[in-house]
Length: 501
Image (cartoon, rainbow, N blue to C red; front, side, top):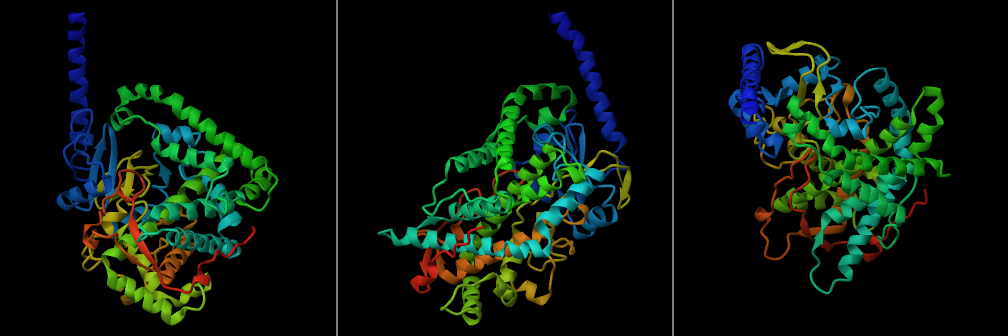
């Protein structure tokens, strides 16, 4: 046995040497970056919050860096000029997706939209989704649903605090997630899982359980995913992943078989034969819309409210604008938003400082290309650090300061046309739901500010509020925001405006 073990030593040494020589061969041509270790690359010194770690490395190595996950090369860009090159100049060559094993499992190897490679399938499916859900006419038709769900949130907060004998402290995320669930479920498959008492029905409980399990299910480690001769170990994670995918498929198929026809799923089913859509693609789109819609809404408002608590002057200016334009005798409605520039600026500043996806989903090079004199080999994953770009002092004066007024000085687009702020991405893979999401989060924040004044809980100083993020693709606050709402309008304005569709 000892002799057998010793026989493998030269082989292992040779593999390590070849890997090391491989990285050295690329040293001149690839972007600079931290020195990779043999086998594991830079995984050994990668901090849990990846976008902050890449930001720190960029301060030392420059705005374009090489990072090795095992034998897989990643190039991370952290400036607006480089983001423009990646997402506009080289958009077509970088429009594919890098999928790890769990993403391959859940998306049937990219037959959905989010994780599909760029090509005829992607173009076709994106066009169908735009026509089915994201035209200006469709977004306007869904406005009553948005106003219904936002006023339901206000009513719930008001009722919960009215029933409290002590000063009311709420966990804001609970109410934000309810809006997100109800809005996306009504738009996507035409039903509301939460009743008037805030209780989930049986189908709603299964829906929430699936979503929570997606985030908590155990996946292979980065070492297993990215070191070629360890990838065989991924198969041990397949059974729970496969079971969960089957559960997601069953739920989606139940929705597809129901009779309600006023929703996205039906729109997709109605053009299934015309466009050659498979059932797997429709199910993939079903879950793409749900995951993307839920995270953006809850994350954006929670971070915005955390910043407002830390900056009371911004709350006061928001109140002043709302009182002047809307007054105290009616509720804000979506048509008012265009007349509330400071409210819009608060949302923009929140999305600048706390983009829901701080590290853009990985773009994969489908050809060899050159950026800023550096070679980007075919197959490389290219990531845009949106969070880092928002902290570049060359384009954002005092970038670490929460200052909505900066958007009064210049009208900045946040839907992918201005590469200084990219909360929804840009180019061929820009988020289709950006306009809908902006309308909803702006309306939500408008209602929260119009109906309540806000304070930290007793004994908590505003500057003590934790602004740490959880590790992951999306950036929820690590500590859910605890906050005190103080009603500021007549009681009859805290009623839900119910829309039955």
